[in-house]
Length: 330
View (cartoon, rainbow, N blue to C red):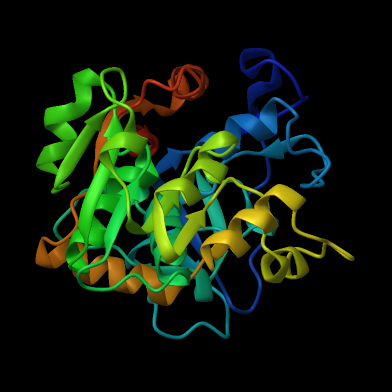
């Protein structure tokens, strides 16, 4: 089968190439999916560039990609709840990475049936962003009436998080650039902050929650604008001690600066390292079919243009998700 593989670390165009590889083997509790579409994420090109090679040990060459939608073509003997020809979508676990390919094998615990009212391309853009947003916001107990700032509202995670937070009854502030203000407002944000014109710290304050999608100083500055006893949910900041333990980081201690900020505000801080979860994908399916969540797609590339898609994503200009369509392969 055809697949897009990481051949070496470094430049995206030089590090990726299309290869003929064996169709993946599937285990007792796996299904084999004929890929119709796959979305790409910043973690993908960061892997190619070598930024995560100390954390994610890959044997190169390795097929790239985590998000997928497609059709079940084979299944293991232990599989229940899925049948041949079912339309599904998933965020595959690390050990099954490789969705930019004709076929991918996935553990059924990580898979859900595709929302019936959207395309394969739209569905493929939901798993990583949706699961990341849900797990991060639920980790700090988002609830009706919470005042929350969501950084980078036009990004994949941010655009999903705005919709999810509004569905939970939260009052949503978000940041974006001038060209995206109206677009992000249409997602449901109550107050859109144009970061080229305004200082978000002067607009949003005394908040219940900050959702930190940017890291660095944004993580620390979140504590300036939450109320006493507020919560900071991050997907890019330093690990909290519980998450560090889960990630296998022995003898980990919070950075002194972060520990001080948490103490000063009696705050709750949580780093989310997203885990694939089929049950949560079923919840997303329901929300999409009910119209609570709408998938946000920026651009769709054909499979043969997948390397160009990664180069575009790396510019940081994407508004929503960048998708690789495999429709012409079948």
